[in-house]
View 1: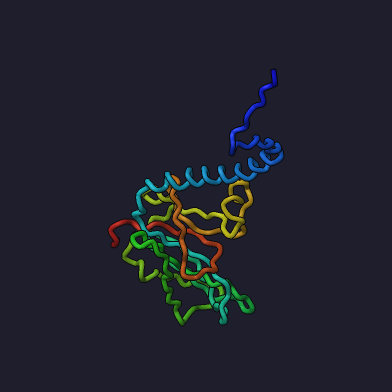
View 2: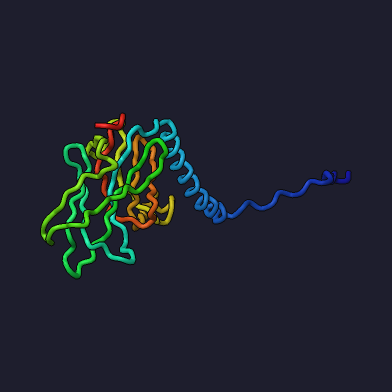
Length: 211
């Protein structure tokens, strides 16, 4: 009897070769960092979405680069008896101090603006200090601590680095950006001047306004 020949169904192709293991390794090597980043984003962003908005303003100081006319004085800000004060002294001859400025983070708008400081025209000698109260904040009580009564805290975090992947794998940036944080929520403090450094918090303003 003649042997039966199998009949091939039209349109059916023979199965191709299995992909090389090296290809699977490349796919896994590319996909793994993406999955890690996605999980990191979810773990970082989702908890912060449930955190209430800040309830207090924050006043902080920062140094800015020299402008065209170097400052003839040095200014040191501090909180005394619940008020923001500035200790002002003449700069020594030949010394060009950094311009120290005062900023206010307003929690209701989320904006940061500079608070002007009126330097007296009749300053005394080089080693003498003139102390003034910041007029705009005179009637507001300031709590000189890093953490606000509502739980938000001031921090400096590395910025201008290689991005999220770099942060995950420990590659930090070279700039310290001011933020306020609470339970996973991070709010950047972006002053009008993009070039600031040596940022330091002075205190949180009590809700309700006046002293």
